[in-house]
Every structure is written in C-alpha cells, then in structure tokens.
Image (cartoon, rainbow, N blue to C red):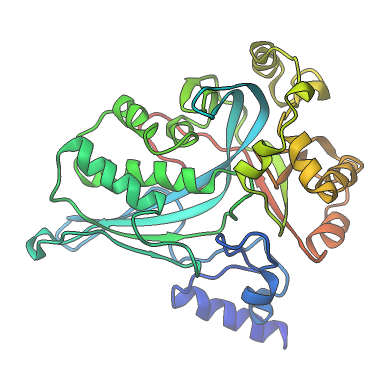
Length: 370
C-alpha cells in the first residue's frame, strides 16, 4: 500500500474519531501477544509511537454548547515511573510498606467526561472504552472513582458519561488504571462545581487504591505506606527525556510480591535516596540511587526481562535504566545516540514496544497536559 494511501487512511481515522491502538495493547490479556489482535499496518505500519488518535488534544479541554454551558471535559491521564522503590516490610494486613519517588510522564490515556442530562433522571454512569475486554462495570476504577465522588460529596444525582481512550498497557508498572481513577475524580469534581477541595480528593483517593493519591500531586512526589501517603516535593525538570520499553508479556503485582526474597532487599535509606534526587536531579549523584526492590522477584519470574534490561544498559545515550514498579516496563533516562538504530532494533522486535516520552508536571489548579 502506498504512503499516500496510508496518509489518507490516517486522516479518515482521525476525522471519524476512531480510537485505535497501534500494534496494540489489550490491557486485560497482558500475557499474550497483542500484535495478532490489533495490527493496523494499513494506517501507520509499525509506528507505535502514534498510540492513540483523537480529534481533540489530550489535555484539560472543555467543550461548550452554544449557550456557553460546559458539556465535556477532555482530560489527559498520565502514567508514572518509580525513580526508586524500596520495599520496607510486610504488614500484618499482607500489604507492604514502601518508600518511592514517583514521577508522571507524558505517555498516557485520555478521559472524556461529561454530566448526563439530569432531566432524564439517570441512575447509572455510562462508560465506554476503546480497548476490547476492558471491564465497563463497577469493577473499573473510573466507575469506582465516580461512585466515590457521589458518596463523598453528597451529590447523588450527578451521573456521568465517560469514554476512556486507553494507550497505557496493563501489568506494566506504569499506574495506568490508577491515573485513570485520579483523572476521573478531578474531572467529576470540576463538573460538579468543585464541591471538594484538593486536600479532600487526596484523602478520599486512598480508599480506591495505593497509587491513585500520587496522581493528584503536581507530578513529583515521595510516597510511603502502601503508596497512599504522599509527600509533595519540588518537581523534577519537565521535559526530561526517557524511553519506556514494554515487553508484551506482563506480571501481576501479587505474582511479583510472591517471589520477593526479603533477605535480598536493599538496605539503602529511602530518605537518603530522596535527598540525592532533590539535590542532583535525575542524575541523583550516581547509578546506585536507582533502586527497585521488585526487580529481583520480577527477574526471577521472567529471566528474559533481566536480559532485556542488560541490553538496554549498553545503549549509548541512556544515563539510567531500571524497571518501573512491579514491571514489566523498563524505563531508560536519556535518549539513544542513534535513535533510528535503537528504534529499529527494539521497537521492531517481536514482543517489545517502545514509547519515547518525557517528564511532565502541572501547576496548582491546572490538570496535566499531554
């Protein structure tokens, strides 16, 4: 098929507001290859960097009716990496106390959110997602977040139409679902007329999951407890380049923690690690500040993941290479000296997807923008 035909198909795809996933990710079946289910070579070949398409930028955009009434929010839902992740102890409730420096990155999803017409007396939210297989019932974190907002604010007559445009894969250690929930909380609060303060959103978010609280920060935060205790810190420089390398195969968080060797945990003081990042930025004064206690169990479960990290560490231009969260994504701080050669070697390799991205932060009162 000709390049001109490809461009025409791409234009029509965007124009019709079709949401697609390039060389794909179905977030429910992370241990199988998505390439067989979601190939779209006729659109952009193997260019997975154009992960999703929408006619509207994935930022905090509001569309309005002719009368000026707000109708829809279009919100960017970023994902995150862990610049260090220390596992401190197992708790009596079988959760683990951790200490980690979280950072938002531009790669993410998009949430389109609007209020349903109250005159029709809706009793449930309407939720759709471009990813086949993603649950659209009350088990989805977006719906759980909307339910929580109604419960906490007392605005029990507010129901929403939500469309989630997924790009972030599951079982990646990138917090895609947690970011979606935090974005839904922020958007619902805006459409309800801001009945909740930022502090209340942060407090309530811990009821939904461990990482959700972080996404209500400005983009850089030190998180402890299960991850729900957030200490904001000075943002690391926005625009810092990195590459996220994600194998098709995934690992569940319980699977990784189940293989954790407590005797192999780092003994580094997380407060010391934090101070190194705050003093030196992403350089952190050396490679030894980049610690993830979950690499050992993840690599034990998937030895090929360790081999992939070792390959990436040899790439000229990458300053630091580490697995994010419980995996299986590996992030590489910096940019390869030979970008074309790197993308050809890794992005075109069967079973691996590469996402060039960068750090993002936000100002108070403004949501994240892509």
